[in-house]
Amino acid sequence: MRLIPFQNWKRWKIRTLFLISAIVAFPTTFYALSYYTDIIMFEKYGHLISDRVVWSVDTDEKVVAFTFDDGPNETYTPQLLDILARKEAKATFFLLGKHVEKYPEIVKRIHSEGHEIGNHSFKHSFLPLYSKSYVKRQIESTSALIEKTVGTMPIYFRPPMGLFTPSMLDAIGESGMRTVVGEVYPRDPYKPGIDKIVERVLSRIKPGSIIILHDSGTFGTVDRSQTIAAVSIIIDRLRERGYRFLTVRELIGLNGR
Image 1: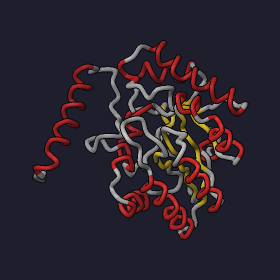
Image 2: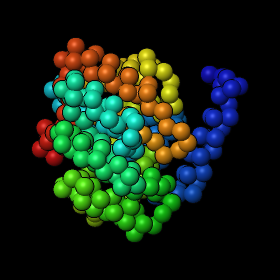
Image 3: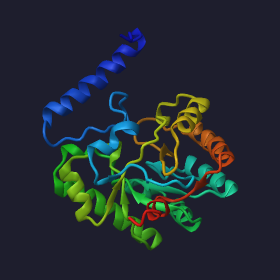
Image 4: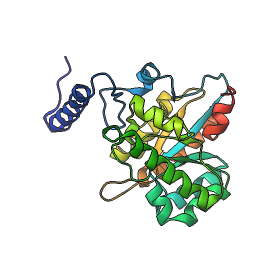
């Protein structure tokens, strides 16, 4: 049995209680897939939860999709775009409606530089606790803002914190969108260190992987400097292995889905 270090006990207990509470509260309808838990590893088990969600793409081609959540951010998104331009790599940005409202010029830059824009809800609410109509409003208001800003509607939605219910998946589909999560997540918001972020991505990557990273956030002071530095290294290392970088739409399109 692996003992839990004392300093990690509180964090482990909170996560465990959260997961147990969620399962008890929604015994038949709650799909617990949280970015913020080490208990359920969606890199291994995501595909068992729902086939209505895109976790990765089955391909032999050495292609992957970088995705970035919670933006745009006035500091880190431009830095990230500079790196992607310099490295000639494309990515997909899952944006929050409230940040689209605040930083429309950055959204326009994302679009003009050939990256894909996805929907990450308006406020980053804990959507499994809300009604289907609320979920649809969160999705559709954000899609409308994105269309107003860049002239095109997003077609992919990533649920905040990776949490969803069957009702949420219905709402997403009825809003004309497809649910995308991903299965390579190095937990960069925890700021584990540049080397650790790089190692976690490189050790889990495979053809068709969707990588989940963050260029902004919703809680407290946002510092994505480790993520920005790690992305530059990851691109170089994967390129050495022969990988190419596609948008989510391009990646999914390989299978004609």
